[in-house]
Image 1 (cartoon, one colour):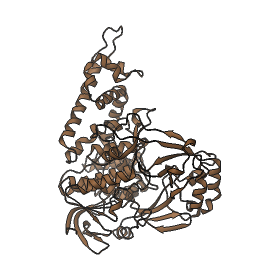
Image 2: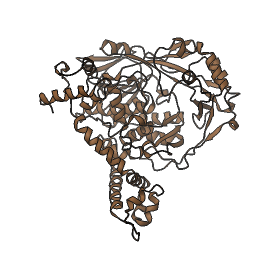
Image 3: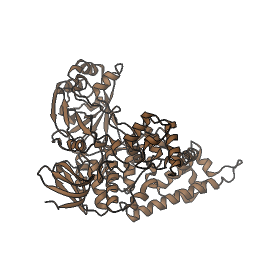
Image 4: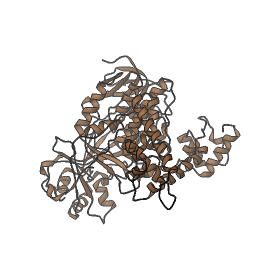
Length: 607
């Protein structure tokens, strides 16, 4: 039974939908979360892992803003690893294998017990719009429910089609129905709708693997939690395993490319460039025989192993034959075959940085419908959409994160200013200020926003503020205090900057540091060691933001802007940037076009 009206309706209970619904409900609004199948809430469709390079930073930011993904990961993870520890701190990235079923169960429990949140089973077939504003949704049953905002998070379900060899069939993911009507509804409302592709590897039986032929990969001895609200990780960790393809594997795949839908024309849409199918690797890198494969357990009490690196849509007989040429998998039994899926998305130049659509007020899009790929990217968008939908109804300031304060800001800015021709995936290389946007300081950067919107409790926020002040205090103290008894005048900060020294080596000269939390000690060491680079990035941010943050009026007539190319005018009309900084990042916009906009805005006294 539904109530006749809810302030916010969230459609889809994947990673984006969960964060959106929780944010809206926690901000005090009655929220309806609609899912086609409550049993698959928070189901990780692909890799049983959270985090990774660039993605781990996003999860830390979600946590700092008051989201749930980091807490769920800490409670259900079976292996933690900090990636890139051999490189600089700017690219350190946390990653964790999770127990697929425990993760889903945890999220279901959180949703069920969340005040102001109702979970309902249903399929939405239409968004009801009145005078370019959302007024409700219509279910497949014919029932209409009124609302002020809709947050649409359908994942790969919009006109989804699964491919395995020459076989195709409609599905949102394996074993679940596709959604047929929403794309048509968008087109009727005047939106452009596109098509993308993604895929998943086979799952194999652990009992059929010869682990003696594999290389063991253990987790970190001292696992670092994802959430700032988790004191320590006490769950036992289990290993993953490494193997690789051989020349025989490659030959089998190459001989059957005429049956691979990616090369027969059966699949016409574009897949993720940085996570290609094994058959694409074979064609793209013909000289390589040994492609690494990571065998990752899907949980503690399951026989299923995920073959990371072997995403594919080749026929099932070819999948089996190829897998059995791989060391350790000679007698492998396949539990679930790999497949590709094509689905509709809404090119995100049609949404604002708040994730509200430009055409329809109160309609927000989050996750793969915006052309992104990955659990973390989806959850981040869901959280931002949930906060902004609730803020709009409550007449609060919207949350607009920037490229210089978060990876989430980079993500949203990228997808709203660039043409999406393939599923977008976050990497540290996409962030120009990644030394400032480290995974370890997300709480210092963003927790004030989480507290502002009521998603972070007062005690957690006060602890963060105390830690931040302590970091600043002791960084200043180490710069001003000098090593006594030394022939040369050297500050404790300069001593810490030496590569061979750590914060523990400085404690003997500043005993107060010993009593600080480990997180604060880590921040002091990083801030001191990288102070020169950090100062340079902060100066660059200050310099560029003076112009970039200038707003462009929503109704600006680009035909009246002199000195601009025709291509630039068409691009600007399409993307409708909100700031000069956004306009600069649109493909095809030249520096001279930006100068023309700036001069025009000065003439009409907007800046």
